[in-house]
Image 1: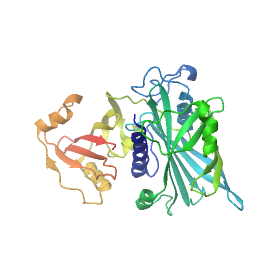
Image 2 (image 1 turned 90 degrees about the vertical axis):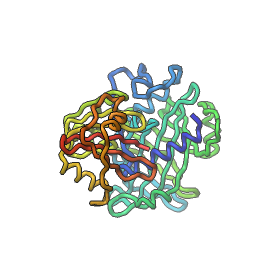
Image 3 (image 1 turned 120 degrees about the vertical axis):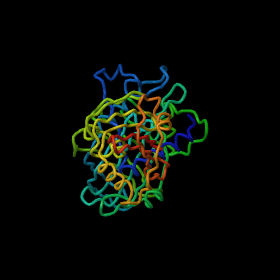
Image 4 (image 1 turned 180 degrees about the horizontal axis):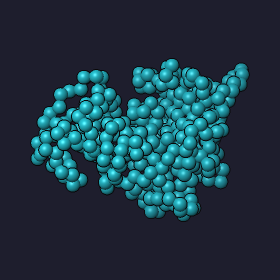
Length: 364
């Protein structure tokens, strides 16, 4: 994959996640009990990766997966005149099955009580020839409001920095170098670490239990460097469930689904849910009452701001969902969600008489 395109996807991943949840969201993928040394990229949900790829970086994925959830984060800022210590909160989310490209997100807020600042790191892991490319995209630091979240305008204006990483399995460390990545630039090797350090960089240490340490990262040009370490879990590790691409997955209720980036598109009172997951979106069908469906539209939009639905013929319905083997709805009315800044949206097809809805969601 072209490295400039990779950076574009990292930016889309980070911005999309903020729009969807206020922090980078996750898709919770189940791990098998295969020993880590024997795991393949396919075991972790990386569909379509060449078989000859290095497996050294699998430890990076395993550490990120084990670290998912919220941690206290002890930070030290190294300024020109003084050193400051503060406790923050680190949230780790993501998986191999987030959207079109595998992604993880680290969201760091500080101080932990009444946070005023936030920085986000969006990870991406992609194959490049016979090697694995580890990419990072920093957004922020950003000032946040009393609700602990930045405004959409602040998010769009926030500083963004791309990085490329080298994994050192012996030290369990990713060495990050800030760089504008030119088209076709070859992947760095472990022998390049001393060269990168001379140019300026920072490191993240990934412990096998999911703890992350950040070492001397300059957040803004000519600004103070920060170092810090995840010290204790605030929340339990995220639960896991098995999700597969291109096959029906059934859930009895809305609450049985764990993925926030899927749940936000579904009415909370939906039952008998079937999901059909793809890399760049999902299809769903479920039972829901007319009242609950309309209430859900009013949540997606400002109350009564959504457009009046349009009748959809059985023929059109059949074309939309034929490949899934889902029967067309007899009295379908189509509605759409608001379009997100990255172009993501959902089309809904609701049959009030049957109390059944179909949806077609694109993540971007």
